[in-house]
Length: 119
Image 1 (cartoon, rainbow, N blue to C red):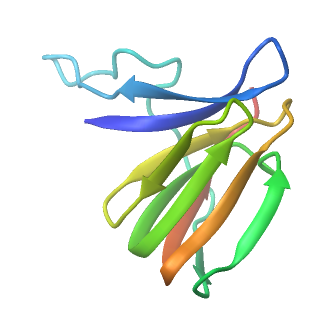
Image 2 (tube, rainbow, N blue to C red):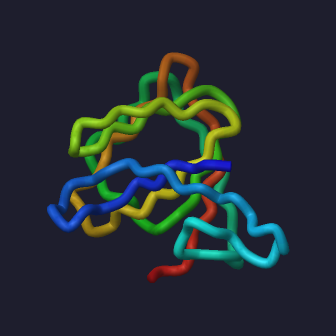
């Protein structure tokens, strides 16, 4: 399983990279990422109306975002644009960057966000 990582580069720009969440054969961990099991204290459910544009912003907290319905488009400062649809997951981790732009597409978007511990 792959997820998208929205992260800050050393240049202060925001980038999208792919993280492979392939479980090790023993099932005791996750390879290809710097985090294993994460204890979540809360889950936030939100809905954006069609066309809602959050403009440029860094993520307010490290969080996994799980798209449940509709679609959202994320644009990074390096010019990459990616559409996320139901079933897609991304990890927003661009706290120390110029940020990203989030826009709900024509049908709007429903999602769950799961905050993660700070580094």
